[in-house]
Image (cartoon, rainbow, N blue to C red; front, top):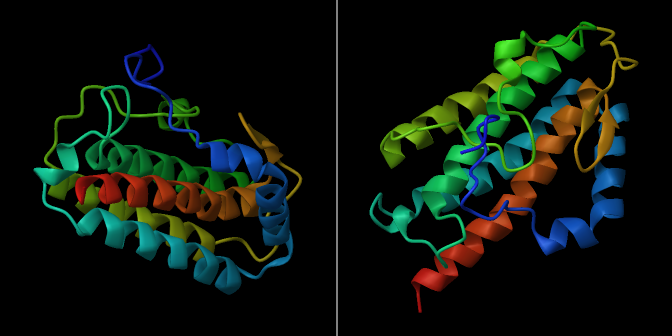
Length: 190
């Protein structure tokens, strides 16, 4: 692990698809600027449910199977998704009020972020992912009537985003990892 919590022995999971679709994803992120909280919740909830369904479709033992030695297994992907979603929920909440989360909440932030030395069981990770899903939806539901949309925090791949775009980022993040999960699951069928 690196000092910021990312795995060093494994490849960072940024798909070729997200790289090729950057402009499309940027449009999706920017479209969230004009959505109501209810519309953002519906947008994000849809991909949250799809990704969680894929994670829930295999056993804890299957979730440890890696497609290749340098790639993530479903457990790694679920852990990363939970960690990212928890951070995004905190960003949405604090940024909408014109501030950053406390530094300890930003620990390990970055592409491919992953908690250090997390040896929890797969089902515990999925439970925490469900909680992170709900917390993000709550952060969106609890946006101030006029959220601060001038306060920007940069994403390492997409650049500066406001709180509404960060909420939309979760949809993009889930869409990307839905593809990863489908690929990993398809490899198990061979």
